[in-house]
Image (cartoon, rainbow, N blue to C red; front, top):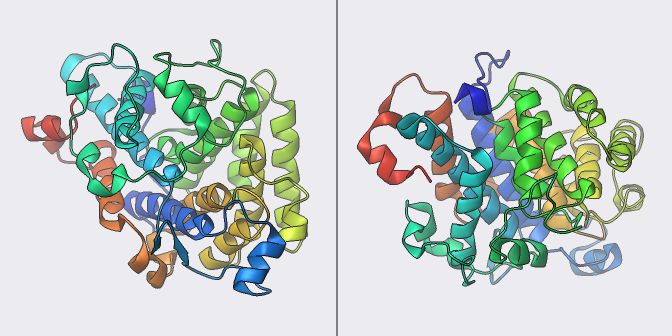
Amino acid sequence: MDKYCGTISDVGTDLTPLDRIRGCLLGGAVGDAIGAAVEFASWSEICAAHGDAGITGMEPSYGRRGAITDDTQMTMFTVEGLIRAAVRLHHTGITTVTGVVWHAYQRWLVTQGEEQAGGWEGEKVDGWLADVTGLHERRAPGDTCLAALTSGLMGAPDIPINDSKGCGGVMRVAPVGLIATPDVAFAHGIDVAAITHGHPGGYLPAGVLAAMVASIMHGASITDAVTDATPLLRSHRDHEDVLRLLDGGRRLGTAATLNAPTIERIGGGWTGDEALAIAVACAIGADDFRHGVLAAANHSGDSDSTAAICGNLLGALWGVDAIPREWLAELELRDEIDTLAHDLHHQFHAADKAVTTASWFMRYPGW
């Protein structure tokens, strides 16, 4: 899989790759669940409902505490697609990460009660993930993702499927950075986001996030991860607006108090470039996981996506033990997300070769 996803041999700290993988995936889901309770609310409405400090932990949304949204659902299917791309490579000698992840998103589409893309074979809804009952809950899926995936077309940076710069691309690509070197993660992050989002402001932030996660996996700080990703971003055409917002997020996290008024200088996080910048600001300025994720959720805008991305970054940085235990205890599909984290580690980092077995292929068929 090196040709496609790269390898990680040394993270340079006492944290293991599994600690960081679990932290990234569970941290993102926790941020998503906290932000879900205040998504679409203005800061004044958040304060009216939760007090002057805003939301301070898990609150009910979608009928329960700790409910995830489409952000985490699609992130889980990204993990599945990455594993299945590697399985395909092993068994057939050829693979395409983007194509196999596109198939994973088609399985997510089925869980949302949507028609599959024209001509796609229904019997390909296999593996274990699509059978998870809790994933068959509709949690405000993005119109752009639904329209793109039901079209039967697979977008790419050079063949855009639309002109959307929404944050639905960046919010799901952190897993790419868990298995890749920064340059490869950047390229695959762009491609995976461009499946559904055709504007550079929608897919370039995804490349930056994936590259940042990859750098963090190698032991970088959040600030250093931004520095590592910046030349990759600069090398791509139409990067100027994304870079401007990313630099603004870095400066904000370093110099300003994290609160709704300062965060909203960036925007609401509805676009990919704004969502990444807000998450970066909150991750750089965070005293700990709790502080950073709550800052990323407490503003007028797309609170679940910004808090999810911040949770991805801080979880990868500090590992799963940094996530408050009471938040994990209430997290919907916690065990299934953790299973995916272990399976991703098993496929790309473990020394044993059980991933070559027939039972593993049945668990993650190679398409």
